[in-house]
Image (tube, rainbow, N blue to C red; front, top):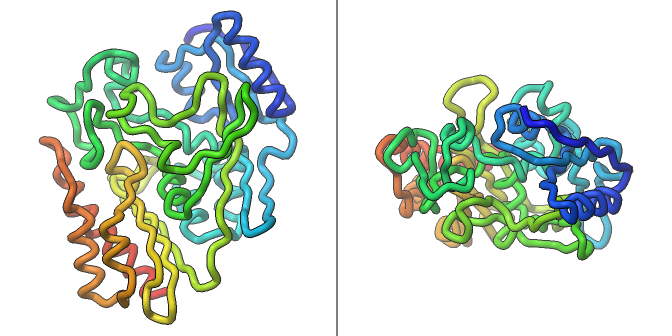
Length: 324
């Protein structure tokens, strides 16, 4: 493992200042909240940062507060704390689905959203797009777990469970950096490989995700997160679905459906959302929604199983909302 300098900070401003100073010295920087993924990357050599800025002692960075119809969640809240927060079902269920209790006790919201892909080529030292190379080895290689939506030139899947739930809830991402704080919506925060194959988000050098803000859900909204894994152990989603519906009695007034585990970014099903509005969640409607969900799927040679799995996952998620 490459030697690195650890810097402990007690505020976000101090973290940004430390990152700015390190960058001015020509050093690369990583921020560590829980560190569950970063430490593994440092050991494996897939992260070669010169300086690691430890955020664990930052005051007030995991608080949940609400004002003027907006709920703000600090980025250093652990997944265990988030899963027991009493917030939206889709978000607490997504947090509870991650890893093991030991991981959820340490891993943070910001870390989960900004973790790097788990593609085996990237994680095992191949000089692929994600590692700064000029090839995605999964295209003609082992691609069982890779993207069926939004692929090219890289075919990674976005690994976060929280990201689809946050996108379905209409979250904004709060970013701090040398130029102060800015807020970014989901469409602009997550970056497709066609925009930049080496990155998954729009964080600039010296910036970090410090939290999210969520609009307060309508009283008549319902939500659910459904995750399918390849084994009942700590693993990432083969397919996941985050669904948020606003209801008027049995009629759907608005719908937000986002997929995880199958795309290079949290994948919003806009056609399915439009179809659901004004309808009841009958068996026929749920079936049609599942069929529509896979209309744009483009599987590779070995991941075609994700297509029917995605259709079934959308149906099951909507049925969960029907059955309460």
